[in-house]
Amino acid sequence: MNEDPPAPTEMVYPLTSTEPDVSRETEPLPDDETPIAAAAATAARIRGGRTDTWPRPVSTRVLTVANQKGGVGKTTTTVNIAAALALHGLRVLVIDLDPQGNASTALAVPHHAGEPSVYEVLIEGEPLATALHEVEAVPGLACVPATIDLAGAEIELVSLVARESRLQRALSALLQESTETGQAFDFVFIDCPPSLGLLTINAFVAASEVLIPIQCEYYALEGLGQLIRNVELIQSHLNPDLAVSTILLTMYDGRTRLAAQVADEVRSHFDDLVLATAIPRSVRVSEAPSYSQTVLTYDPGSSGALSYLEAAREMAHRAATGGGGATT
Image (cartoon, rainbow, N blue to C red; front, side, top):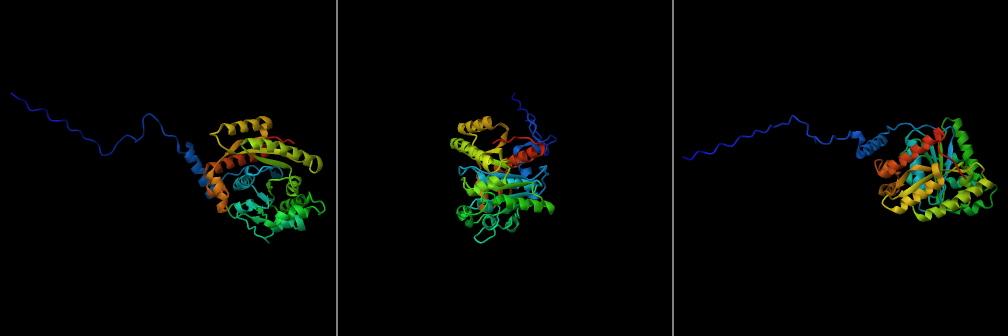
């Protein structure tokens, strides 16, 4: 006699689960510990103006950003380090001493022909304050622009009295005036052209520190040695207080062995002068000036922006603690 097969067991699935929908094997990282979340949080703080205040230096630090080799990131470093410091509560001034006026462009400061600029300061003896502009996108940041008129300043300076120290006298007067009015600057950055003409010499005489951006390529090492020798000449003859205080590795490509070798060579020779942070190659950093912005306002969550923020943080805390070194 055939028996009917047993009826299939009915499976009932709950409409809602009582267990959390996560893997039992891996606990998720807290939101603020993932790299993407950290970058997003940083970007949100910058856009919303909710950044912590970094320590102020004991006195105004005046840094000339220089490298005789072009294309190493002098202007990019100048405007982004300055913006990062200003975004964290410091008062910062950028002096554009490059006739190309790229720093002025990145900070959206007017610099067409006829606009009051650093040219009138050097050649006609005008006060720096007459050419100073506040940067609208970054509170606490000011800029003295460069116009195309500056292209002929090298020749015009030759016949002037005290031609090497004209910027130094104008800057000293501005710093004294700003201190007396309660608007003292914490940092001054002077962006130089890629040469050792009278404009760069004026920058060296006006500053007490040199910030050197170094591209992580072989030719950068040759240019660095020549730059150090020129700084020694300036120190010997025109400004005994001048010293190389900071070296920043730029355009670092971690995929290449050459970049790592160049970085190791620079660190082995200059030790604690070299910031721990290296600036990676970044499309966002390159794009930002075309929108008249720094990368910190253009894309504050990008790798380039975060790297410049960290480099600026190192500089601010070194100044407060007396860390780092100086060499000639």
